[in-house]
Length: 397
Image 1: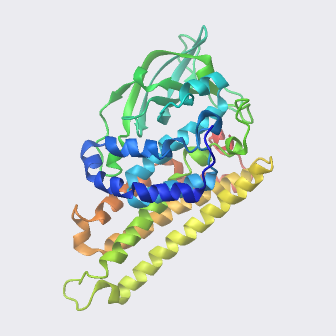
Image 2: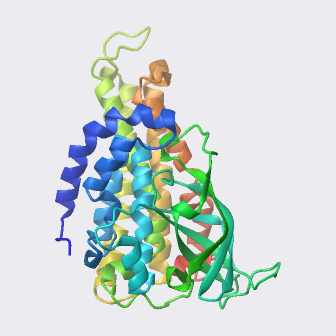
Image 3: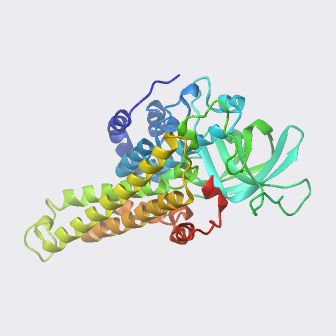
């Protein structure tokens, strides 16, 4: 069983990783996935196993620590922070599995990296002992190095064209764990931002998955009996989509760090004195800092509030889930505004590839395109705050 680590321990590990992250950032962009030495270093630091139960050798950290580590990594490099969010967040799914399946994926000192995808849903057909899985899933971040994959599927009867109907008015969902070796990777990740995440498409064709490695979407459904700790009762999307806000805040904080440093020596054209002496820049910097600090404070406050209830055996209310989603969405949009301020203040030199600001700008706007904290989530949050049910019920999981 792994010993308990603190947020301070992990944040210290992040700082130790900083040189290798920076060293391989350009290589990751060129290869379109994280560099092998960086992945190995993240493995050694336990970063991919932050949410794995201690009984399986994981770190089982609290949610706020998870968000802080993601932000700290994204502050150094956006793609590294993003892969940490996906490959470090997906293991929360072991809490829904029987013990033998969880052990097979993460037990016995395995160095599992679990990638995960949601849309579009695949096809799961019940058969003797399990399911036949087929589908093509986009945005499989970290799949280049993953050893297992978590895929969302609708359940179909054999030969049926329409999925089975579930109990909450949507097609029945199954969350499927299958070895990455049983899937085909399609080289589709040719993008402008978060280039090193390797978020290619993955394909499965009639892959048999034993029933123990599949869990169905059921509100308030059972978790694996071994994993009853509060961590595994925290809202599921608090690990699977809302940490996007932490990635965004990290990228924005990195941009603020960069432009603050540049301002010490950069002299704008047709101007006298350094950038730091100009009132416009002073205003831009202050606005960016205010955007990031206030968004971070609210996000952390909501996480802390929901975690406190979870520790005491209480489920998060619909309003609190709306607040968590809204705080994550606000963090993403506020961070984007902060990066734009920093990039604009950098002037023409910020457009050169040698400037971290251009990568931070590209990465930030790739982050904003994810549905998890897209502008439509304001509508979702508003519905819930007004007492209306969300259109996607698994936000209540």
